[in-house]
Image (tube, rainbow over all chains, first blue to last red):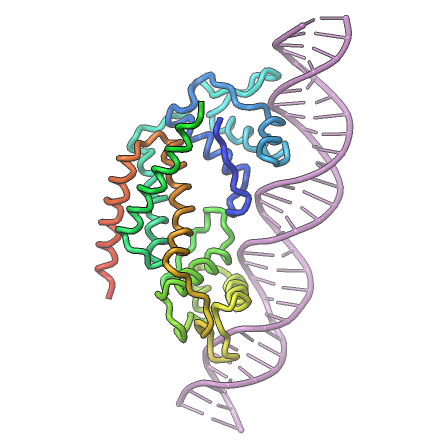
Length: 132
Length: 132
DNA sequence: CGGATTGTACTAACACAATGATACAAGATC
DNA sequence: GATCTTGTATCATTGTGTTAGTACAATCCG
């Protein structure tokens, strides 16, 4: 499960985990029944405290996204809310707005931003292709 | 001066101010000698505590971006660091990467993301044209 | 059965963001 | 000169994220 934490961006770590798992499940990239890494394992991988992961998983359970089978692990729940494309697009729209505002502040023309998006996409897709 | 605060995004408010002013100055959108709003005024406008703005201005002074004329206000400093376009692009690249990662998690195809970027740009540019 | 693994619970501690409320000093303005 | 406005300096307080350490209960697995 591809979860990435950014220690420096201000957003609480547990919320970063919650949102990323939420979106993975909402889009179908994580399917119902898929198992999440054990708390201790994910904590070790992200170099954070197990309590922080536990908190994220707790929130995810409250949200109905995840289901805990006592001692067998944590799984994507049956009734995990899925988002139709329109809703997912809406979430992205907010991010895009922030990006556009940032570009404007940095006085980077829209055309340059577009070029950048295409370029970074090429790079990232390349990295992805290397994975199994 | 167009500074916008997002109370909910986790990033400390004072840092949001610092970064936005930093980028505005680095790109030339804020010019040397331009006056920043008084602490109390900006605080009122953003609906935050004056202490928070004061902290942001203090950090900005330490960074050499801003200069305080005792009782006359706060101004963009002479030696305010400017960033060449290459550096500004680099900053944007990080944002773009995060956006691409989010789109991937949400399973939104790249083409749709591109379309979204264009659409939001149209909307935002429209709003801008309405300003004096 | 017995040990490993899972999530849970709890407490203490620390750091930091942000608020609220003053009070102060010094230059600007009338 | 009197007043306003500027940034400065405190201090106490609240809320919250994160770490650390420990113990526990339940279930899975060999």
